Length: 92
Length: 478
Image (cartoon, rainbow over all chains, first blue to last red; front, top):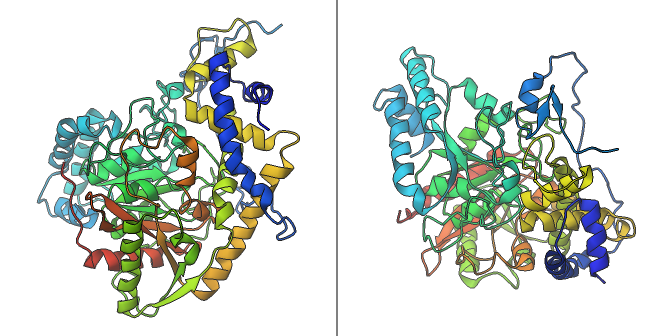
């Protein structure tokens, strides 16, 4: 059963802040969505062997040295940059 | 206008590349306010590209795409041109590199007219979740275009580009093509490099083409396919020449018609039009074979669990720090990230991230994600059995035609269930093409899909082309 505690737990995992009203709406939405997702629980699990990785990686490239993008172009889209570094709130 | 015809007109100097580009830009300026198919119009750079293209044409050095005006979905990275994914999160994001598909077309000096509107982060089937406003259907602007490549489909339908690049994770090229009365090709997984396509669900995403005809989609695919060292999932199994079977005899082909795609939930007018197309192929001499995809009933749930799980992981990179929207709220590191994601993402994106983390989190993983991957394996084996018996499979593209804006897109469950006919193709990694096979009583286009064996785009393009040559397409009112 989906409830607001589970929504809060998922919000924490998802790193998304919600207001109380938004949490309530999300709980209602998720309840309806999970109801159709429950269909997969009816699947006969004895049928196929499950394949976690459905993608073939047969054509992996060889390692080779190549130049990287200039630091300025990588940091150009950040909102707060100083001395070629991303500025964030104090962590410790 | 057909790409080959445009190519000929440019090469034979019936029209100049600059004049051609200017015509499209003028039409975009006049018409797109009614459709909202573009987020960014690149007028200046398009005219510059057209000038260079004309120089190449004059020097006799034109390639297949030199001077051809093409639109690009706004989740495909374009160096120096904003790539927003129709999200506030990336409202100001300017990529420092080009996607591989853009690099390939730039080698020929194509003309990029602009970046097209879409559902935010390609999550949706209506193109109404865009931060920049919804896209309107050129056949009836009170109706949706479908999605997520709704801007791409509308830009083709309204004549605002010669062809469009889109992306398809669960039907996002085919369904809007169906709703907007144009042709949409989703290539085999791995046929086209995903390098530079902003990831939604990496095991399902594929760059595709929307154009006026099957032949045009093949023409563009010839320019963008191929192995790319930057995409470990791209394949060496594609060989190009995607239009080479057009005009050949298709009467010996076997066409599978799966009964599960014609049951409850399929609109009667859509059913009638698609079955009429089946009859058309039968009259040509094709053998029509009843086939079955029994696990279709699990497909929508499996698709949403797998794609959302991958989206939850892929979208964790958007933290407001390295690039993208950054909130002014949050005094510590964690709160800054949480508030940036709260303000930067729209509701549907948040729902998908939450659903993905639900499918992956302890206590639910086995029942949801693991079972979804089992269903994926099962669907692949059911498709393999179908393609042992037939060459292509014919289905409706969507259960309905384009509906009124506001009628359905605010109900996530309804929206998810509407993807029933397209998602299995992505789950199985197969190629498929959607084209118009009729019009409903409101004059809205009805789409049918032809699904092929992996890396056999040539056959579905030829089969689709045959139908298009005998089908009378109605132009939109715009």
